[in-house]
Length: 408
Image 1 (cartoon, rainbow, N blue to C red):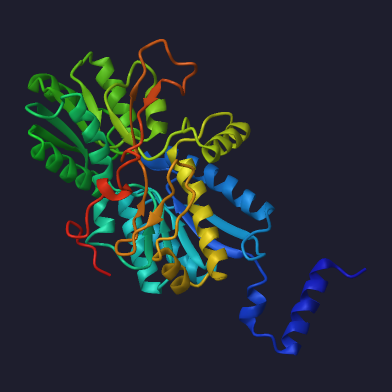
Image 2: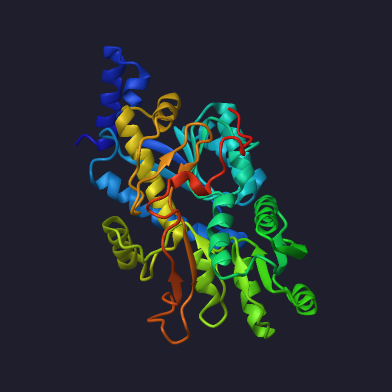
């Protein structure tokens, strides 16, 4: 009996005899995509959600016939740190022969992958890193950014804080994560506070592996601020708000960065204040409802924003490849730069700006429900209306071309 392997070999030999170029034969195989995200360290919990959301998108696309009749083969790996992320990205291109790169949450790692993409002139869909500088001074034409940037997060949370009279005339104590994203967030937060009449009375840097925040909590207690504003990342936020509650501190807390997974990990009774998010599982759109239902069926919990953003990012790539009938980087860049619209499971569609490659979309502020109103351990967050408002341009929260230093 002829084995499947022998049939495949015979088919390949026939193609060679007939003179089909190798590239034609390759296009009948799977489309290989390299995906990097942190699966360990202080962002590891977010990376786990990212992979879960991505898996749903892969299966949905492949079950529906793939892209251009080809299946998607997405290779996911732990990016670990900036140096490792760079090495793995280059290896994926050279050895694994991936056609595109996608992923990341850590801004410092995203920066090194962006450099690999530019050096190899290959598309990188940068999904979850939020640092402004990635879309600014460090931008390159081979990278497109899906998540909202720091400035949008600050503006989204800041507008809500202004409505609560927690900025103008207030003394504000800041705590900042000591890496690229934290520094970027702190810069934007300080600018917003100063522009709106607040005063920063302290801004402490903390290492990304900090787990004991007691020295900072003692300084906050001594300072007696009107507001505590955090510029932290990953599980740092969870640890901080838990310890803040344990210390019995009652000064209002707000943050310019908080992922819903970290809020859930903090738990009801430990979290308060006003925070920004790019998406949440209670959004009342058909697309979001279907995605949430499928995620709950598979994993027994609601998806958090990194699951959603990986899911829609692969759908965005699939739309672009189908529209261009290609995986060629230059053709995909040209398509994205037309500002084509994408269904991102929100009330309004998103699009990439042609000059800084940022996906323009809605964001949302959220706070905490009164104690006792939560239906389950994921239900204690209260989400506000989308910003910008429906009657405002989507770009209103983003840096303008004049404010941004991006030059391709």
